[in-house]
Length: 385
Image 1 (cartoon, rainbow, N blue to C red):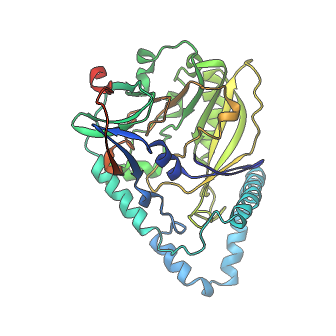
Image 2: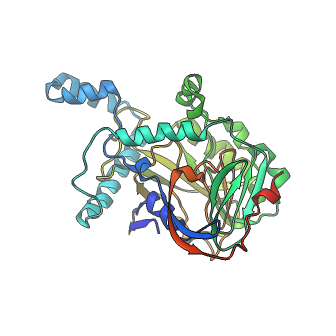
Image 3: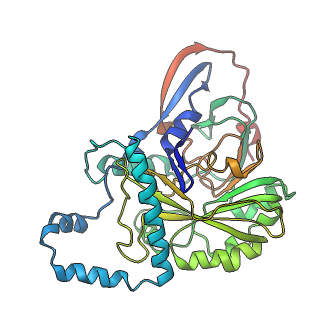
């Protein structure tokens, strides 16, 4: 559904297509309809530039040779291993994206305006969905039908066979059975981040509750994951976080490192959303670190794969991994996402923002005007705790 192109080096996917494919057949009251996600949030038509960068870009022809030389010298200050990794990602990205462009996967008539519409849509999203979000509830849609339902006087859409828990992660042992049941566990931790901390002081709707790495290490992943299961954790480019995964978090979970993949973020035209190595720590990609149970069944996980997609304009709205993980998981796997911000069919989702992208204000409802029997009930209200 989301997979647009696949090679031995990685994948090109569409997050927007995935969302729209999930909600092609929805029960909304007594009517069947389909939902279309707000595509404006994915209208990334150019690299993200600050105002001072725009001015510099306009004056690009006047940049002196001396200035260019300084930039080259600055890049050489990066550790050799980091430069080697960046060069590898650049080479693999150019290899995949060039084929994708030859296949006509990217339009050539994109107008660039520094993503103005996506920026405004993102701001409206924060304003419309932030209002002291409700916590401490759980629910499920046990049916094979996508349905809409009201929860706490707001209306949401729930994919088929989904379960969700809106609790602090520190309460996970109280709500989930620790019987090594999941084949795949995905985490998108709220890493401690200075820029997010600064945002929090300016406007709280763009911030979230951050956690220290020591707290993340205490999540009982080893008791939730089956012996042949896989763990994947999204990670920023901050070396301290990556080192913590290798040296503290994975060992505490009883997990051994298997592979590191790279989510490369692109514009609608297929270009990276910022330059590679424009400055140390600022790259057009994030990391996905994969691991498995120590002494568990061996799973062949290739290293260095690239996941390429147009990102959402909303912070930390990660692309779906369901399709690209299929070949590494059993049929009908039991999957759990921790720190989830949206629901997935047949997944269990846990997080304080678990319904963030399920609100119907993010979708356009296209009614089919087909009356159906009203015999499918959402179990959310019954399971409110």
